[in-house]
Image 1: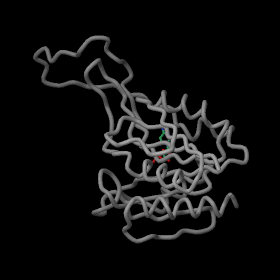
Image 2 (image 1 turned 90 degrees about the vertical axis):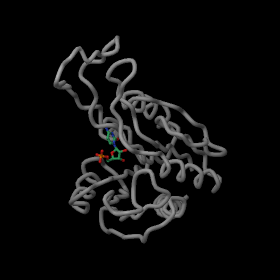
Image 3 (image 1 turned 60 degrees about the horizontal axis):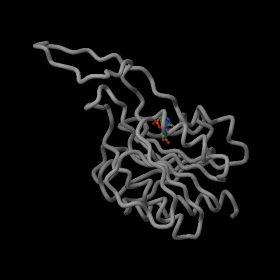
Length: 211
Ligand code: C5P
């Protein structure tokens, strides 16, 4: 099958030297891309800025902002059967981007005005067709309710949710502890290496697609 996978954070510039971002390392998305390519699937990986080696046998498209990532997903989705949104897309971006470096100027306080970034999954909902869409949810509370809401609202076939407050799960680490939901069921997996989580996710996708 042909997979489009997103990974890593996005960066939302504030001025030429500063940006807003998050703690995503990209490891989960890169593990999915490595595993899918090793299984012989055709993989396009859209990656935010990360410090990882590109996966073998995958086409890598590098992006910076949420808007760049949306444009790249739209461009590459047409030729794909499966979209896995493992990227931690920034939810907010500065409403104004300075052309010049912002100066302290002796100020005691600075208030930033932010605006929402585009929600990639919601923006491409109409392009889904018969494709399989898989999302991720990194939560600190109400994991089950949030995962089920996102599954429904983002028109997903599967969502992989993890509580980022659990040691060894989520951002920056080599392991993850996730619960996977579809519309009917949920399955909690033990703490596993991200590559093992990737294997199990791909097993579920291959079952869905009967590829
Ligand atoms: O940020 P949130 O928890 O809503 O993310 C859930 C899913 O939606 C993830 O798969 C993420 O990649 C995706 N997402 C997106 N566009 C955004 C924010 C998140 O497609 N702006």
